[in-house]
Amino acid sequence: MKVIIVGAGIGGLTLALMLHKRGIECEVFESVRELKPLGVGINLLPHAATELKDVGMLETLQANAVETSALHYYNRFGQSIWQEPRGLAAGYAVPQLSIHRGRLQLLLAEAVRERLGADKLHTGKAFESLTQDADGVTALFRDRSNNGAAVDFRGDVLVGADGIHSAVRKGFYPDRDEFRFSGRILWRAVTYTRPYLDGRTMFMAGYQDQKFVAYPIVDEAAPAGTVAINWIAELSVPEDRVSYTDWNRVVDKSVFASEFQSWKWPWIDIPALIDGTEAIYEFPLVDKDPLPRWTHGKATLMGDAAHPLYPIGSNGSAQAILDARCLADRLLETVQKHHRNVEAALKEYEAERLPATTGIILRNRLNGPEQVMQMAHERAPDGFAHINDVIPQEVLEEVSLRYKRAAGFDPSKLKANKA
Image (cartoon, rainbow, N blue to C red; front, side, top):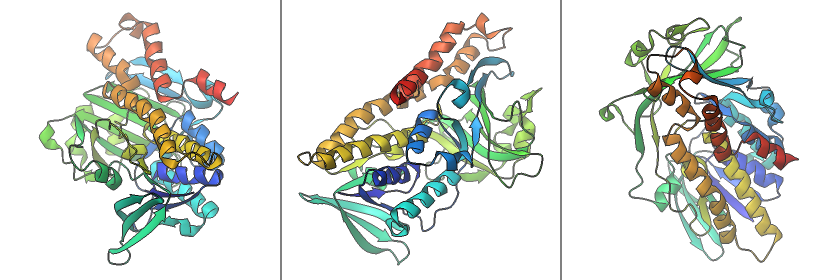
C-alpha cells in the first residue's frame, strides 16, 4: 500500500511517521517551497504527547518545549476562577508541552526525512486535483519550483492534510463551505520578559468578548534572565473588521491594546507584555460547519482540512494527531486483512473521528472549558469575593472534566488505555 499525504503540517507529518512505523509506504507533498518555523505557540495535551511518544518523538519535543505545570482561569480583574494541574503534575504519564508551532513542524519534518528518506517529503508541490479508478488514486500537483509544471503521483490512498485552506477539501466541497466567523479577532505575539508565577503555568483571563491567554515557550533568542511568553489577546469586533483573505498579518498594538490597559495584577502586567513585543499577528477566529463526510472513495481528510476548530481548549493540533493515529491503525488493518479494501478502512476512520471532532467543534463554539470565565462574568460582572459564591465548586469541576472526556484526555481513560 502507498499513501499520498497532501500537506506537511503537524497532522500530515505525524501521519507519515505513524504509517512508517506500521510498515506502510507514504510520501508527503507540501505546497510551500521551504518549510520555515512560522506561527506562534501551541499546547500539546497529554493525549497528543502520548501518540508522539509512540513514534519516538517525545524526548526530542521535551528538549524543545516547556512542560506545562498548571492551567489557571481568571476574570478581567485578575480574580481566580479555576486552577488545575496539567501534564505530569495532574497524574498523566506524559507531560503537556508548550511549544512553538513552527519548531514542532520542523522537528517532525526532520524525523520524516531521516526515517522515510529525504525524497519522501516533497516541497513546492501545490495540489490541484485527483482522479480515482479501481486500482488507486492519481494526484495532480503544480511544481512551484518548475514554473508550475504539472506533475502527477500515483497511490492507493490520498489523505488531505492541507490545513484550514485545504485544496483537497475544496475539490470535494467547491460550494457552500464558507468560514464561520465567531465575531472575535485574535492578536498573537511573543514577548521576552521575566517569568510569571512558577514559570510553567498557562493562564486565561477575561470572558468571551475580551480575553487574554499566555504561556511560556522555548526560544533561544530570549535575552539572559528572560523567557519567551507566547500570548493571545482576543476581542469581539464588528464583522466588517474581518478579511478572510488576509491572515497572519502584522498589525500595530494600537488596534486593541487600549482595551487591556487596566489589566495589571501583582503577578503580571499585561499592558507591559503587549508593549514589549516586536511583532503582533492578527487572525480572525473562525471555524467551518461540520462536513457530512470526509471520505470520497480512496481519498479522505484529516486535521484542520477535515474539522477546523476555534483555538479553544488547546485541541487543534491534538485532534489532528489523534486523526493520524486512528487512520494509520485502520490502514494497517487493511494491509493485515487482505480481504478488506481501503474504502472500508477510510469509512471506519471517518465513523470514529468525524462524530468526535464534530462534538469538539460545537463545544468550542460554546467556549469549551473556558465557559467558566463566561459564567463568572455573567454572574458577577463586577467581580466576586470568592468564586464559589457565584459558581459552585462541583460545577467548575464538571465543566473541566466534561471537556477532557469529549476531547479525549480524561486522565482515568488515558491511564486505562495505557495500562
